[in-house]
Length: 198
Image 1 (cartoon, rainbow, N blue to C red):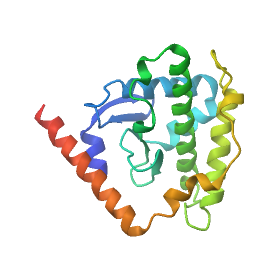
Image 2: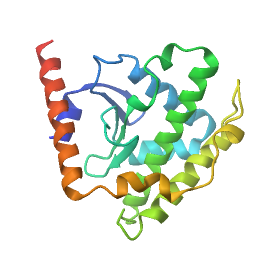
Image 3: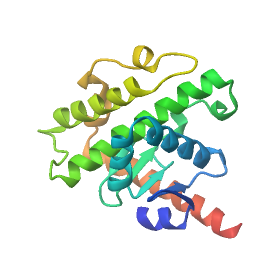
């Protein structure tokens, strides 16, 4: 069902990656922000950009219960734009740049999950700390490459890895995960029905 929703969403393409915009009623500028983030990755970190293009099929604004996650079935980086201020695309350039760099770092992080999965390194309870450590390191490596105009991402965004940041997600019971997924799919289905009527 998730893949069907992605295919029926408003989409645009950047390189090989489809930008699937499923919450257009909330913020129609989200696809432009994702494009800007991809352009930033392409300009400052060609190796990370190549990873995004090779391992992600979609980038979507459909994450709801985590800030972002990678779904290997659909090869999708799902991003929760509720973690960004709703008006961030119209903020002053310094604030816009801050959130744009964060968005690009999130995409780099999730594309690293995709690469690890493609290389046979599954995300399991046993290996998840190492998985996140690698993805976090790549995200921080990206921040160090970004030449900030209004601030220094290497100084302001780079932070040490702390596995406790992932505990809320890791500690969810299977029942809680199923219920969150059911709610997300129900919401996406309702949004798709509205979009099809327009």
